[in-house]
Image (cartoon, rainbow, N blue to C red):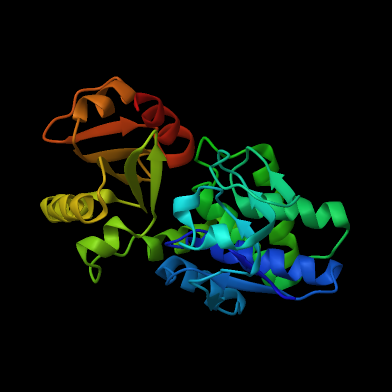
Length: 306
């Protein structure tokens, strides 16, 4: 019986590349077939990575009832298919907090507090002594550079930087930082995107003690280009809040050069967000210096408020 490997909804580069890299690894080790999958459309950044290294787009998989699955890059139930509880989860590879998914059978679990799921998968390759193909090494390298914001994120560890350097050698990339910046230029393009596309480009919803909180992040080389569109983003955030029954919607406009984020807030109770970061909002916004990571610098501070 086949096993489908996939990451979260609104897939980012880590979840897409993780599905590819983990499937290849398991296919070298197991007799059954592991199939890379995805839950939604990919971003321009991810397309850039696949095109650069000849990656094949994983198949779309929006229902997993009665399937065997190996999940990547999250363990929160809202991040997966509506029927995820009807699937058999045989494994997890992740670098986030432990979420609310449960299993009925024992499973393989690789969860590490490091910068990227593909770094976890890199360690799995090393553990099993499996060589990483050149094209997959290149894609894994780019996913780690994306998740760690080219090593600037506070989530980045020495394990991540070591992995990138070794993967760059395998992929025969001499200047991985230059290629990483080319990727972020692609990621920063906003002119042809609607407000909804921007707000949900990297977006996750969290159940915080019975309250639904949506948190999106736009990582860009220069967020000033979004200044004329902030009101448009706010109006769409209000629609998202109403459509999905959310208590709060937060959008981080992350400037990787200034190393900080402008936070946009639409909430039933803004005081919770002010308390979380010990700040005062001005017209529903605030600049958060040195805040680059949703999973390490936002979620752990917002969740206790609920």
